[in-house]
Length: 82
Image 1 (tube, rainbow, N blue to C red):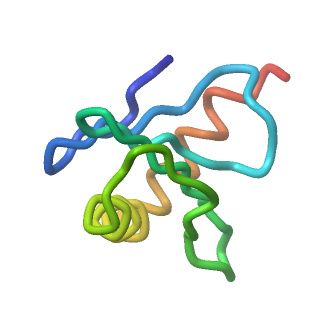
Image 2 (image 1 turned 90 degrees about the horizontal axis):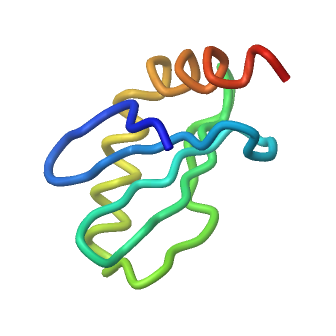
Image 3 (image 1 turned 180 degrees about the vertical axis):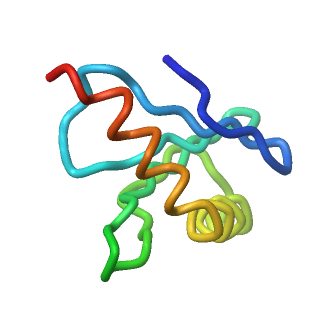
């Protein structure tokens, strides 16, 4: 489970062999927020959350939005052999 970004206590992970669409698992403490990364025209959006507080969900989404290009590049690198 490659961690591709660490910020503000979050670990943003992209799992090999995971399904499309491009997304990250933002993990902090006991909570996980799954964020679809969008594309050049669509902003990231929260797909689901498990035990993540609303503020953690908002913070994770803001970080993913600010790092959208990086996260999309990492998704492409990890899934390039599929």
